[in-house]
Structure formats: C-alpha cells, structure tokens
Image (cartoon, rainbow, N blue to C red):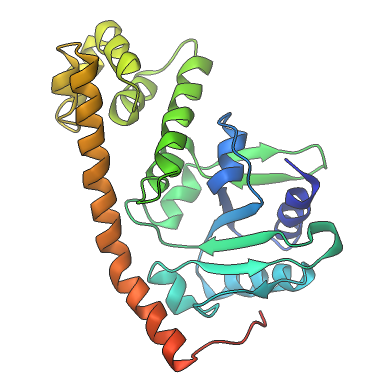
Amino acid sequence: MQNPIHKVLSTLYSHNVQALLMGGQACIWYGAAEFSRDTDIAVLASEENLTVLKGALRELHAKRIALPPFEQQYLTRGHAVHFRSYHPDAMNMRIDVMSVMRGVDPFDQLWMRRNVLQTEHNFSFNVLSLPDLVRAKKTQRDKDWPMIRRLIESDYIAQKNPSTDQVKFWLLESRTPAMLISLAQHYRSEMETSVTFRPLLNIVIGRNESAITDALQQEEKFVREIDREYWSPLKKELEYLRRTNIGIEEEV
C-alpha cells in the first residue's frame, strides 16, 4: 500500500472509527492486485461512530465531493458518501464511505467476521472478510467480476489444507470453470451439500467447461440486473437532491 493509504487508515485508527477496509485496497491485501487511488470503507452508522469519523475526516482536510450529504439517513438507506483528502500526506486521496450494501450482512455481522491488517507503521486496521468482500463486489460494474475471480483464485492457491467451510466458499463463489471441475472431483461431500445453494454446480458435474462458462455468464447477468434494480431508487433520490440543491455544501 502507498503512503497516502497509510495516512488515511492511521487517521481513522487514531480516532477510533469503527470501520472496515473494502474495495480495491482490501483486494490488494487479499492478494488480488488492483491499482486504486481510493480508500473504500464500511462504517457503523451510529451517531457516535459518525461523530468520530467526522473528526478523522477533518484531520485529513477532507471535503465531500458529491451528493448525498454526510448524514446518517443516507448511509442507512444504502448510499455512499464521497470525500477527497487535501492533507499533504494524503493529497487527493478519495475516501468513499458506506454502511449498507446490497447482498451483504449488517455491519455488526461484518465486524464479527473481520480480519485485521497489520501494518509496518505500528497500527492495525480492520478489513472486510474475504467472503463478505466477494459479496460486496457483486455489482453491475464490469471491473468487479474479474476481481471476484482473482480473489477466489488467489485464496485457492494460498490454502494448502482448506477447511470444509473454505471449500464450500470456493464452490459457491468460484468463477473459474477449471477450478470448479477440480473442486467437484476432489471434494464430493462438500459438492453435494453446496448444489442446493448454487444450482450452477449441477452443470459442473458434466465437466464441460464451455457449458460452465455459459452458466457463469448467465449467473453474472442475473446478479447485475438485481444490482441495477437495487440502485434505481437510490439514483432517483440523488437526482432529486441535485435538482433541489439539497446538501450541496462540501464541508464535513
């Protein structure tokens, strides 16, 4: 991670913000390299936590750069609030804040499953668990789906003695035909219990990579459409805010 990222994370840490790193920087931590100048975080949208988050953003000389306003009501409805840091040590670093994400459990459950990032600068930071990060990446954006594939492939390669839960995670989330075929061959028991939750696995049994690829594309298309429907009312709300100039100020 680059120094500007360290500055943002250490500032959040020093203010005791209850937050989880996600997005591109979390992908880097899990071994799926991605260039990112953003710091994406999930936060607990309580009044107390948002107050300490505001203090951290002020220290970073952060300004809100887009709608909606930085208010609890927008975070709890699923909006992201976007800031840019103008601190010399994190100049132009974008900070995107969310609390609720489609297809992802409430923050308290995410917090219980979190991993801890140990840095070289004498502080630690909490990171969204890999399964939760994968779920959060299931959006309509083109760039997210190749990243999901890389995240799971990287985890698969790194794990030499996987647990049953680890294997089930791969079976339910892998987007690599050859990997799915191999898993089905080596972990039959886990395969049998996972088919119920992912019908696509029925096709894997036939070991036809072309058919599996087609099924993966259909699965992705279905999830993308769900994500578009989820964001449709939120986008309409943003358009209303723009038309009415509500919350147009940049101050934190």
